[in-house]
Amino acid sequence: MNLHTLLLFIPACFALNLLPGANNLLAMSNGNQFGVRYAVTASAGRVLGFTILITLTSMGLSAIIYTSPLLFNGVKLAGALYLFWISYQLWHSETKTVSADTTLNTFSQRARQEFLLSISNPKALLIFVAFFPQYINTEHNIALQFIILGMFFVSFEVIACSIYASTGAFMRKLLTVPKNRKRFNRLCAVLVGLLGIELLLSNLINHHF
Image (spheres, rainbow, N blue to C red):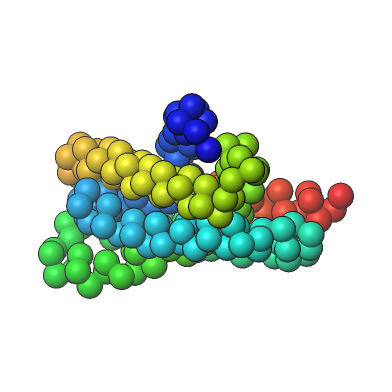
């Protein structure tokens, strides 16, 4: 992998990281409820999840999944169901101001949500399997190149989380009325739910055909 290839990879990868996926929507909701620092710190769960996926993909696990449609569809179904669960939690989330103690008590839960969303995301596998190889030189150490690209990817994930969390925190100032904050949480819930429906429908379509 040369510098030119890396310079082509960076903007394309960052654009993917900025897409409004489930993790970014969760970060925006966390930023709105708890603040930017809390949301970005909780993204450690996301980084861990994607790091595991990248490592396993470089080891060839993705090839096993893609040769077994039943297994891959099972992963997609599990991801869709978890998105529905997150949507349900966002819909019924509290709208009152959260104290520091409560924030500390709920940090592990939010980090776990970030982790489970990332590790159960089949679209991440598609990125690592279909997108990363375009920038890898097969004449050099493939695993090392995967690690380098993966480091950029997870770093951009933190930046994307910061952007979405900051957006959520900014909107928090505009949503001082509990009713409006509740509407914001439910909007995030609907968007996450739609992602789950999209994933579920793609699972059913692939299974049908």
